[in-house]
Amino acid sequence: MAGMPLSDDYPVRRVPVVTYLLITANVVVYLMSPMSALAVWYGGDLMARMCPVELYLLRWAAIPAELLTGDQVAGTAACGGGDFTKLPWLSSVTSMFLHGDGFHLLSNMVYLFVFGPVVEDRLGRYRYLGLYAASGIAATYAFALSTGVDDVPLVGASGAISGVLGAYLAVQSRSRVITLVFFILPVRLPGWALVATYFVLQYFLYISVSLFPGGGTDAGVAYAAHVYGFIAGVIGGLLMYRIRWRAGTRLSDVY
View 1 (cartoon, rainbow, N blue to C red):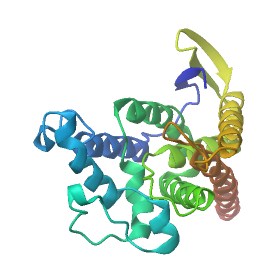
View 2 (cartoon, rainbow, N blue to C red; view 1 turned 180 degrees about the horizontal axis):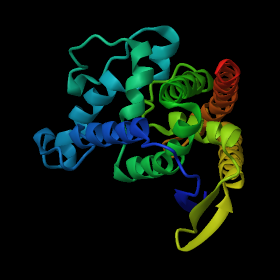
View 3 (cartoon, rainbow, N blue to C red; view 1 turned 180 degrees about the vertical axis):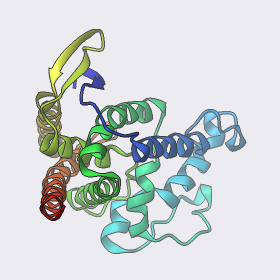
């Protein structure tokens, strides 16, 4: 998307605690990882960090081959392969808190900061957290199925955040979002137009790159995870919001 969202005009009714905690967790995990330049205990230069990064990703990232077969992928002989036992299904959760670099982290957290509070307010904290996790897990497994038995690690909160955008489209698309178009010009755009454009772009890129070997990746971008995470968010948002609304109706009938 040729722009960056800055704020949504929907007036949230309470502090979006879950969103802020998710952002904090993502930032802290990144700063403590070997991908962060601040984590000097992993070494001061790129060459010294090659093995720490490989072993870190082997342990915590989601690897399609592991998710589909249940067999742990071995590392390179040069790095020792890693002395740990991994639960592949658990990596579909831990991988959501890993990011390849600072820009990857920043772009994800900006979208979560803008759209997360709205969805959290509309769904409620626990439903919102459940939707975030379920969207991320669904996106991870869908990505694995689209790539096949591949050993390229998948990291990032993009699948879960795409789920948040999908839920936003389902439960609160009438807001307007201030967006930096081409990262320069601030413009107020309808929220539904912004997130729908995001989905169309991700879907187009997913289909385009899927025509070539790689199964939905281009320069390290997992478009398949974005697409399926968004779809999961739309479905989850509709179901959760309808359940919440019906429960609220019953309570109002009683009181």
